[in-house]
Length: 364
Ligand code: HSE
Image (cartoon, helix red, strand yellow):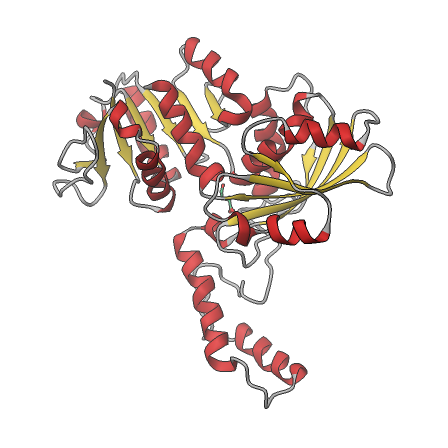
C-alpha cells in the first residue's frame, strides 16, 4: 500500500477532504500519515491504516518517506516545502489545493469529471504535481462540460456570486458575526420605518466597530466586487484565473476567452455564476440542453421555470452536495448563438476537496 501524508487536514478544505475520504472508505486503500506545523507528537486522527502520532510538517526526512503528499495547508507551505522536497530528490506525487503550482508547465490541474483522461495520461507520462483548480473555474467547467466537449464554446463571460467560504473559515464566521451585529441591534423593530431602519443599518455597517477584520468591509447587506489581488490589465486575480486555468484544464488547442466580474456575496459555502456563452455555431436549444445534462454524473440540468429554479438552483439547496445544477438555460435576445445560463456549486466539495480526493484514489 502507498504511504500518503496529509498536511493541512484540520483546516476547512482539509476537514471536508477527511470527511469525504471517510464516507468513501478511501483510507482502506492506503497507509495514512498526518503532518502538522504545530501538533507534532500528538494523537493522530483514527483512520484505517493510520499512523497513530502526528508528524511535523517541517520534517523533510519524514515527508520524504511518503509516496504521496496531499497538502491543504495553503500557498506559503507549498512555496517553502515543495522546492525543498524536490531539491532533496523526493520523487513522490504532490497533490495540492493551493494555487502556487497551478500554472507551472510541469503541473496538471486536476478536475476528475472533466479531465480524467488528461490526469491518467499525465500519470503515465511520469508527471508528479497534481493541483486542484480555482473553485469558480472547476464549478463552471463541470457545469458547461457538455458544451466544451462538443466544441461549442467560442467564449464565456461569467459574473460570479462567490460565497464567504472561498475567503476562508474566519471570513465565514465574520459574515455571521456581521449579520448577528445587525440582527441584535435592529432585529424586527416595527417601531422604525423601513427607510429610517436602512439609514441606521447603513451607518452601523460603515462604522469602525462593525466586525470586518478579515474582509476589511461589510459583506452582510452588501456585495464586494473584487476578489484577490489586482492584475496590471484591470482584472482581479480571480478573474484572470478563469481563462488561464480553464484552458489548461481542458488542454485546448485554441485559447477560449473566458472573462467576467468576480463578486463576493453573503452566501456561506456555495459559489454561483451567471454566464453568457457565445456558441461557435447555431444549435437547437434542446440539443444544448441534452449535451449539458449528459456530460458527467454531477451536472444537473434545471428546467428554465421559476418554481424549479428557485427550489433547486440556489446556494441554500446545493450546500453540502456534489451536485452541480445549471439552469436559466435559454437563447438570449442578443442573437441565436448567445446562450444564458446560471450555475451553483459547493465551493468546498467540487470547488476544492473532491478533485484532490479523486486524483488520490487514482494514484493509490
Ligand atoms: N479564490 C476563491 C474565492 C477560493 O476567493 O472564492 C477558491 O479557489
